[in-house]
Length: 211
Image (cartoon, rainbow, N blue to C red):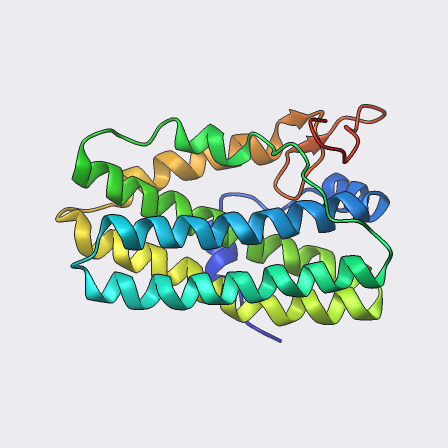
């Protein structure tokens, strides 16, 4: 079992039990959104690479991260196919955008904030995999536990890069975005997704394109 205690001490809250219960009732949505999130994570890593072609350490870390996220994407697709679930686009939650809209515009600040938000998203993904795994069937339990190591490393990679390139302490910005993230996780959210907030009973949005 991977020790994710650094992530649990980093995040300001654990996933509420109500979200875990909703996830068990909406596994198809969880899997569809999980697949989409893996693809977005790979795309985000490659965007950072294209915008920072001289930062060799970032290129190495983001290249590995992108490859791993795409492998995870393929693994989720395989699980969906095995379970007779057609992969399709579903509307994203407001989780990432609730933080992204506060990323500063100046180039260096934008870069650092983007890395911090990336770290937080990876940390929450890891925490949610760990929270869900014990309640899932054998196949999904094994799969989600297998993701903990890479997700924990992605969190550390993003955070270390932010700290390196900030040229100042990142503590204030980390705390700022963690507070936003906590609010997103603990606030009522009618759109159930992998990173959504507290479920609003009887108002789950269906996992269909444009839902």
